[in-house]
Length: 288
Image (cartoon, rainbow, N blue to C red; front, side, top):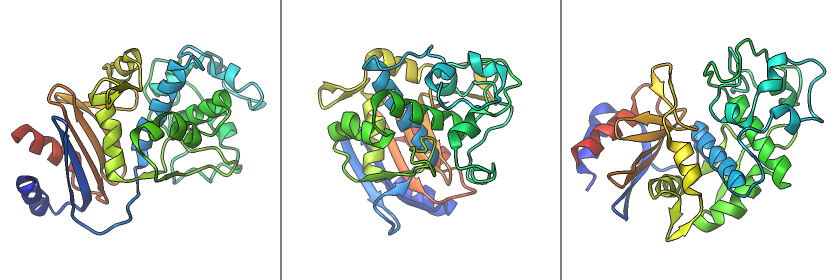
C-alpha cells in the first residue's frame, strides 16, 4: 500500500530507514534500509519526557505550577538569575522559562567547564520574564527528566518503563544519560520505529491503549492544545502543529505525525539533513 509514498521517497532521494503507519486500527510498515532495530529519536525524546511528566501529573506527584527553585533547592547554583524564582514546571514544558539562547545541545553540552548539567541549566541568563518568550532548548527537558527522577525516586527511563512502556509492550530501548547519571530527557532515546508509533497511537486515541486509559483526558488535552505561535509554528507541549494534526520532530528528520480525526499515525526513522521528510509524509497522507 506504500507504492505512492515509496515513489515520493525515491524521487526526493530522502534517506529514510523505515516507517510505520497506523490507520483505523491497522498497522502497516516498510523497511527500506538495513539499520539497527533501535534508532535515536533525537528530539522526539522530548515527547516521551513530556508524557512522563503527564504520568507524574496524573499520579499527583507534581503540579504544573510547581516552582523550579523549590524542586531544586539542594542543587541551586550560588548565583542565578532572579527570574529563575518565577519559573514553573509549565514554563519548562512550554520552553518559556525566559532563556534568550538554548543550551545542552550536542555542540555546547561539554563546553561549560563542568559535568553538572543541572548547574548549567539553572545558571543560564533569563533576560525574559517566564512565559513571555519561547526559546527552544534541551535544558528545559533535561530539567523535567531530573524533576521526574526526584519526585518518583527512580530515573526517568525506569519510571517510564514501569508506568508506560510495560503497558505499551515496549521492551527494548535505551536512553542517554548525562555524566552525573541523569537521563538527558531532551534527546538520546533509542527505540524501534514500531515502538515510536505506539506513542502516537496513545495520543491519537485520547490516552487509551487497548481499552485501558494510560493518560488522563485532561493531560492529553493539555499536551495537544495549541499555544500561541512562536517562530511561525504553533506549539503544544513538545509537539508542533500541522494542518489537521500534530507532529513530533527530531534531528535528521525523525518523525511522529498524528492526525486524530482521521485516526492516522505515521512514524519514521531517517538520516536526512536536507529533505523535509515530515512534509513528504504530510503530502502523502493528504492524498490517501
